[in-house]
Image (cartoon, rainbow, N blue to C red; front, side, top):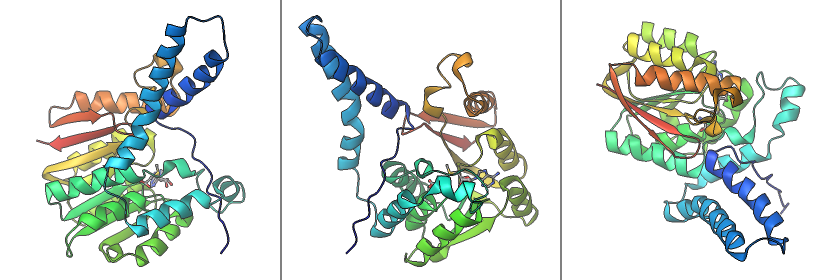
Length: 276
Ligand SMILES: C[S@@+](CC[C@H](N)C(=O)[O-])C[C@H]1O[C@@H](n2cnc3c(N)ncnc32)[C@H](O)[C@@H]1O
């Protein structure tokens, strides 16, 4: 059997980034004899508090299915940079885009809790969150997954074929805004929507979902990356283009009287919106 080395993902959440920074500081201060022992102990404690949380969440959360674990591994071993520079993917993609165990299990729980039968995902990548949610759908449930990149979508479709829940998933290849227009024209509507595609289009997805009837009355939207690595609450001058787009999205949702919402500090921020 060949040993596959799965590359480690870099931290892309406020907590992960904080833990990494504290780790570097701890390495430095632990070598210094001139610092007060109490200060060194406090910094070590702060690092353990930050670094220990994600592994503990993993430990206390139901394990992912074998199919999801295999898909996460496949996604991590793809050479995404080379795929983009060689023209295999139409967008720069990376393994860090995959939502993963804790968020996948959270989304799966939301499908169970809301008893959703029709789910829409905007931004499927290699299909991890789509498959996680499909696992919670009833046999006659449907998940429509929008993805613009054919290579990522193909990886997902292969994984869906390996799962007893894969047949519930329908992939819509193409730009999400055009796909949403088509779905609305066809009269489709959804109980639960997961937004996880182009951050600069989040406001447009939100408006289309609410204005076109795509989101069923009383339906829910879950939105990923609404903390954008902490950029939204750091000073505006420190924001990337995506950080500014998410800050604007968060303001748009907060000012829309048609919805109520909560931003959960899960992974890179997960906002739950209810169409009230
Ligand atoms: C963060 S990843 C999605 C991760 C996925 N939900 C998961 O949990 O594994 C974002 C995906 O959105 C796709 N995407 C970006 N812009 C898009 C657009 N305008 N229309 C459709 N898909 C888009 C990207 O190709 C990428 O695969």
